[in-house]
Amino acid sequence: MAWRIELSGAAEKALKRLDPHAKQRILRFLRDRLLPAEDPRRLGKPLTGTRLGNLWRYRIGDYRLVADLQDGTLTVLVVRIGHRREVYRQSP
Image (cartoon, rainbow, N blue to C red; front, side):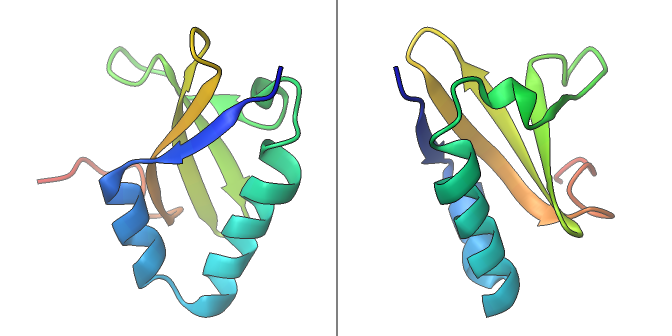
């Protein structure tokens, strides 16, 4: 079974604000690597901590995707997209 990829509202907004080269690189990663993957966990790393225990990160150059892998519906929900120095900071 194939996994689906969904973007949260915040992730879509962040993606629109990126420069065209970074945006294209992230979309290519989602389409060519993550979508056809049998197990998306093999491409990423789990985040640690009590709040972040269920989230995974994917590295695309200097940018990171933070995603929630939902096994019941086979969905990769991208919750945050951002530069590596900013993506892990707590939102106000």
